[in-house]
Amino acid sequence: MAQGVQRFMDLRAWQACVAYKKAIYRVCEKEPLVNDWERRGQLEESVAGPPGHLAEGFGRFSPLDFARFAVMARASLLESQNHLIDLVDRGYISDQQRMALNGLAENALQEVTGLLEYLQSPEAARNAQRARDRGIARRTARRTGTSNPDPRTPEPRTPELRTPELRTMNSAPNPEPECRTQNRTRTRTRKREPGTGNGG
Image 1 (tube, rainbow, N blue to C red):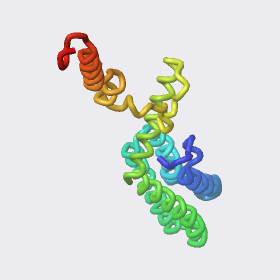
Image 2 (cartoon, rainbow, N blue to C red):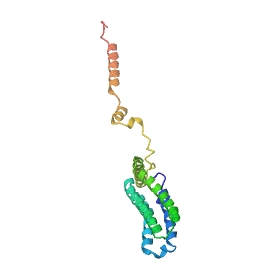
Image 3 (cartoon, one colour):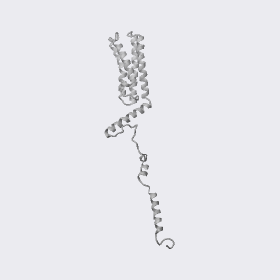
Image 4 (cartoon, rainbow, N blue to C red):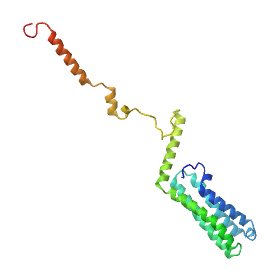
């Protein structure tokens, strides 16, 4: 899902769909459409669907699942545009009214299509994974009482502890230099012993 969006109401696509829906509701409250329950119901249902689909998709926490609901939202918007054409054919609204409403529909379609393209991108998958990692880190921090819940700022590690080989080298002394020192000491001691050397 888009970066920086904390609630589904923050989505530009959702906001555009709601603006279109409200404009259609105002038309449905006027004559002659207000008394044609069948066509009014079809049109209102087609414009109520997109905001609901986007809200449900947002709650899925998966870009690909969200994308499926964005596809349904887009299909409902297209259905509503067809209903508007039918209203013109029946003389319920003028073509000028239809064009004004269609402009709102096109804006909503553009926003939903842009959201859909993002949700199907590798960037969306990466952002979703980072969001899941942050959530896991926060829950782990609450359970364990650690002070570093954000995986983007890992705890510092000393270089010598990065691999088992380095840990062994830093924790265990090298015996070879010590052996050489002991050999030199024994050699010097033997030279000083009486009765050794050239007739001493």
